[in-house]
Image (tube, rainbow, N blue to C red):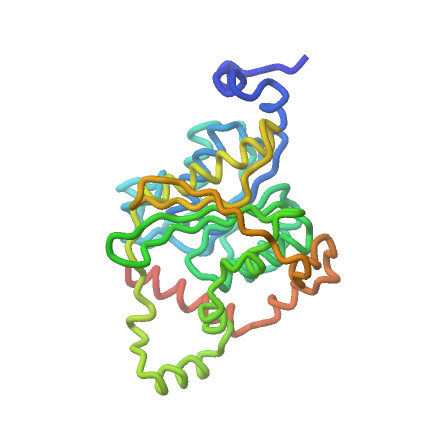
Length: 301
């Protein structure tokens, strides 16, 4: 007989005792512990996920306070790691949850190892370069990967999407969800980016500006991801691979795009180290750039 805690009773009324047990046994990893990752962590903890890890190398900044679930006004800026706030939030909800905070960027041996050990991987990024790397890594080690994105592309248009990449659903690349120009800029050296900017007359300060980001929009996207995770783990129904939230139209759209049958990225699924995704760890200039960016953010915001 499965023992059910009183605190989980209302969950069990929806997806049953076996579903609750599957959640307790699940191992979920969130990469990117910010405006999307924090409400997602809250949902996973409330669902009763037994093992949660969060990876992020950044500290809380003043501009995070409008959307970081679990951040206190008293949290020091600089000086408070985002993954520590996530851990505090999770254990305030349920101290029995096994939590691991990983204060490292995606391009680290620690995060790569965490992906290999996870049952489910969630990516919460602002840029498509890291999005692509985590997607490839999850595919190589055959991990179901939820990619979360919130977006305000122009005035009056806002929303986001949730994409689940697993066997048979395609990947971010073959579904056309990655901005190749953004990826090229991410992987280019600083000298190459500066040369490009001189040619096209782009102001680097404008490129570094981040757009609007608010708690309710992030919260909807995180809730959609948590719901699809919930139905997948508890086996209530098959999860929907691609949901688009159009907040400005007050609706959620189900994408019916089909994956490419000859996608070279999808062909790497389950090949592990043979897929050679670990090659990204050898790109020292990317890690150095990330370290400078993180240091600058903690010192100026």
